[in-house]
Image 1 (cartoon, rainbow, N blue to C red):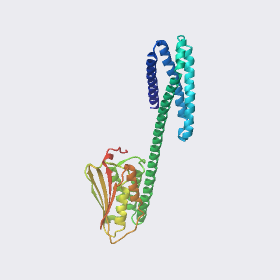
Image 2: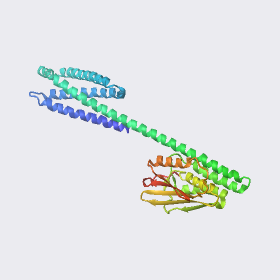
Image 3: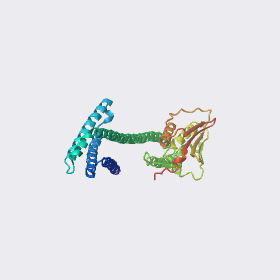
Image 4: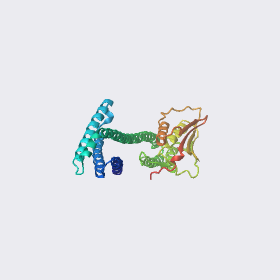
Length: 355
């Protein structure tokens, strides 16, 4: 890609100087008493020398850190550069033109008489050339800065996602191990069943890279593993209801995005309520995207324990980072129910799912 861009610039540079040479040839040949050989030599020599000087100017400007140069320093460099460039251009050009076989005293006198206009023209070409060079280099620097910013943002994105997921896993594991611990003496068979389910669930949670996507079906399958672990402990006190709209199972979503919500629903529903509690999973699809709601019932007469809010906070941060949009997490607290709804935008419906 860099080679193609370089080749295009070289071709454009040559084309521009060919056009300038043709214009110069037309003006020189239109002079009364002009000799075509002299006019052609003048146009080719003077513009070829200037074009070669321009190549040198490009590399000098390219290696110069003009972003750190003061305005006064820039003016001094341009003044010195223009003086050296024009002097070199006129000196080399005149030396070559004076020694051509078809040069005549009259033609040499003509070159000397038009020296001032040639210098002015050279200064204009120098100014245009340097301006274009600086614009090209500034554009390259801007693209490079943007590329670095995007790379840094991507690295920050991946790091933050990894940090948020690393906070979720130990949180869940701590709760699950507590549940298993309580059954190792009273009901070893149930404890073994929980260990198997926990093993499969944790294998799933570690199987995704930070930028990969799961699907609603896969999330629901492993949520059921988690809920089976909790059902072993709470038995009939925990009832799970699923209202999943047909055709939404393949919708892509970040892995383990629902698990903290279900964990909170169990914690604040069954854990903090002496009677029976329900956890309801439901989905609805519209033109704007997919909504997934996690609802739990609770007994308002029992305030329960206040949590740290890590799970819900992490879900909100992950949704904002993943989709770059606010207000994708809605919370509704009723007298007997607590609902958290995640909105997955329609534009993300075709994201690739990690297998």
